[in-house]
Length: 298
Image 1 (cartoon, rainbow, N blue to C red):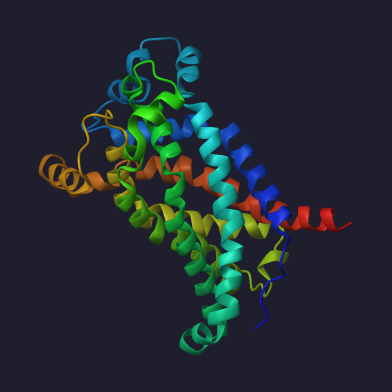
Image 2: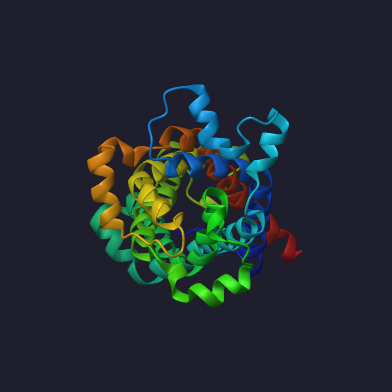
């Protein structure tokens, strides 16, 4: 079975960056809502309580004014999201090409040509997902702005970098543990849909609608698989800088006070909100990269 057509590095960077920019413009408020729901430690029993969890001290303001309070940390979010999408969507094809070059026979012999190809795509996504922790400080600052703005106490970006240093990488192990299966499921679900449902032999030649369909499978699988670790990661990152708490302590206290179902808090909103966001950016990136590759070659 042939490998997919290779696109240039410039096309991968441009296509992925464009997807990140479009995603942040459309979905940042949705991401804020999801993070605040995951950070909430109490049970929500009414619409009024939900309103207070989402809008906090702005819960009593008129609706339009409340909506505009859902854009905290936009600068951090834009920096993080664009870099993340370039790294993830643009970097996975390079990791996939490495596996195709060096381990294609091993995968094909163990799983068969079609499944082996899809699993190489999934494994490449997992490797890229682990390396994504290099961008963790920007993610930490974004989440704190969204869920715990008091942690900044008037400090700007460079002051926080100077004061906190490597503390901004707190929770890196849990982040890597969440990213590895999450990215495996994202790229694996996408590849299996293209391979077995859409019957594509060259994934790079997928149409916009085919990319959209396969992205739904990949995004849904990713969100479900990574949900428990995402809750732990968010709770580590949303605390004040000086009140750090280990992931294992959070797991113990969460099980004790909220039960095992707490690790899936925010999953339904994530599937309904973050799901479309991930589908949107993933499908856009997969469609734009080949388009830019053709454009740059002409």
